[in-house]
Length: 465
View 1 (tube, rainbow, N blue to C red):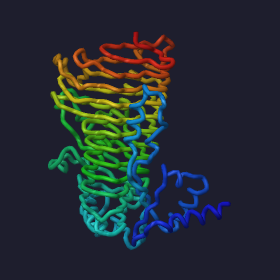
View 2 (cartoon, helix red, strand yellow; view 1 turned 180 degrees about the vertical axis):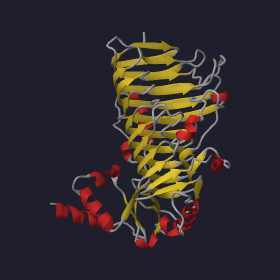
View 3 (cartoon, rainbow, N blue to C red; view 1 turned 60 degrees about the horizontal axis):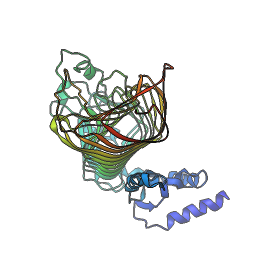
View 4 (cartoon, rainbow, N blue to C red; view 1 turned 45 degrees about the vertical axis):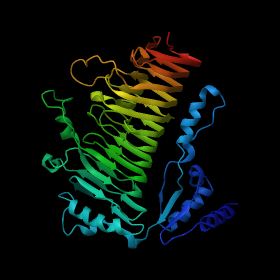
């Protein structure tokens, strides 16, 4: 039987157009690679030919269609998450692997690797099916660096060793908000199982949230993707970012999977994965333990899915903040499911500033497990993250069509469900279905509901009065 399956796999592969370095496999939900028999055959074939996988969001982003007419918008949200891209698998050989060690020229990796990285990138970027490789067994000290495209498609960035950030503040004088940046790239993969270490401890000490005598200012994001599309980031370990760990900015058709993102729970502003101005994003199968939002989704982002996320410590999974400084912000079509949150200061949060405008709409939170989470469910349209009270303002970002379904677990706060919505722009179309949140202390959990228009389905506890 296995031989027949293997032969079938090879025939399927052979039936697709093959260029010098790339062929396509249309694999529904990538199930072919996950199948216990067929997947093994495909992986063996891939490994024997040194193939690397470059994926885009799968059709798992589309869950079951609801027959209930009240849930029609659920189906439209999920349908819109479907990508139109095939799975790309491309070949790499020793001839197109560009190892940064070949460009050291006697330099010590602990001293400065930027020149070697730049030289290796310049070559790998031009190669068909090129591989930019950071080998294992070494620590590479790197100053801020930008890897720019366009490059030949099907590029692989393979990080096997440890890239460690410079802690010299003078190295960041040209751009104090970025460290490793990939920009203007199409059809590429970042993987390898290596470590990206932001060396953030020095930056945290200077944060105004730690030292009140310090001015509040930004710090570098460890790994940034600007204006990129059709790429996958997988199997990486990110730790101790200066501020955010991963920022996906103005990108399209992105898959992020199998990341481990770790920083102390008291490290300031160390968001795990931050999505801004981006569309068609799938984040899956990742562990995020930081001092801020595990995942944050902000303005200009739509069709974002997060599934099978382990979150905590941290500030939970957040949409926003939106509307700061009277800004006009938009987020829509977000689907978060299969997450486990433990010990976080918030659970599923939507946060907007007074005075803003725009919307956060068509959002589904489903199949979420909570353990000792403060504010497990919260919409805060009066968000204020600064010293002193924020001024009262009438305008607000409109929050609508938000579903919480199958949310269970324990709350560290007495109020397990809080809707603090705007009087002039109340929260609308809030659906609560099969909610069971209990106080960690054994007390009866409560709900606080202000200016919210909601509907209960199934058993909902606690419930808005």
